Image (cartoon, rainbow, N blue to C red; front, top):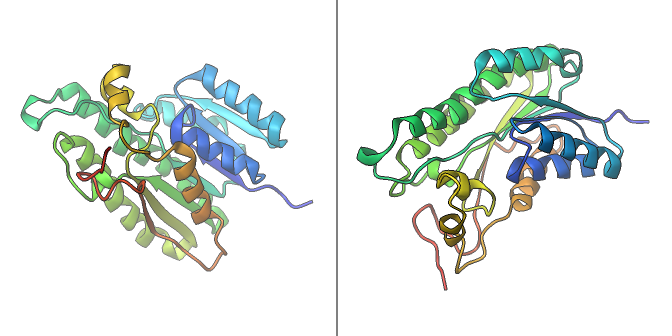
Length: 254
């Protein structure tokens, strides 16, 4: 029997992360899934094990906390020796105010999660891939990294940094046979806007009215397409929007 591949998916408790874990499990990948909400992690792990007969390990931590990331990864180091894929999905936006009206606490959380957390996690996983002389890292970026929009300021800056880091990692890791890719989604109907507006569900829902946005599964499909290419094929960058969206500023609504 062929050994299943192993993927680590961060931010797996909802949205794109959850959908990515699902599509990988559907295709017989074993998983390590992480997030801050242990109840959701355990529920997802139980569901994937039952439906797809794959191995799923959960690690619960806040990706902003460097020592927690290190300790959590150390706890599953025996599994990471077999790692094939890291999907850096954990991320968020907070607030949509002009820069001069923004909250410093929101800025710090976005930078600590979207950029520093991604760096912490990637730093811990890379040595195992180098040892194996193979692996793939997929970073979830955003159209906000390409096209700035009103109120996007620090969120856009953090995702632009993810794009730059993705390209730099590709150069650094090329000699070790490690692929590095980014997927940049447009507007995706997940908890994203609800988190951005600090739990205001009514305000969040208005974001997606009048057009059909992307859904988490659409982005997960794109991730799986990238990681399922033949070994000699590398897709470095994939931009995905719904049909009604041209860029971060232009969306046709009815």
